[in-house]
Amino acid sequence: MYKKAAFRQDNSKIRSLAFVVGLFLFLFVIMKYDSMNLEKKKAELETQYETLVDQIEEQNARTEELKALKTYTKTKKYAEQVAKEKLGLVYSDEIVFKSAQ
Image (cartoon, rainbow, N blue to C red; front, side, top):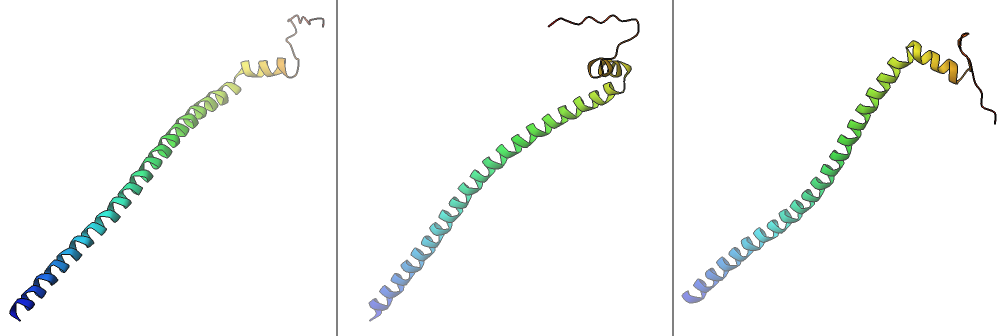
């Protein structure tokens, strides 16, 4: 009887060890799966970040262009240009040539 009890004790130790190893492997697989998903998400977010940085640079350049246009529209040269192109006005000492079409 003593040998049976010892065998049962060894068998339960093996089962316990197998359970712990199985649990460890299970947790490892879950962590690896989550790690792969996080890497994928990280790559997507980096791509999105690069796109947003490019858009910010484009908008900053556009802002500078608009500031320059705002400054230009307050000049006398701009007023003359609009008067000539849109309204057809000329100075009294200018000669206007029109093409015959």
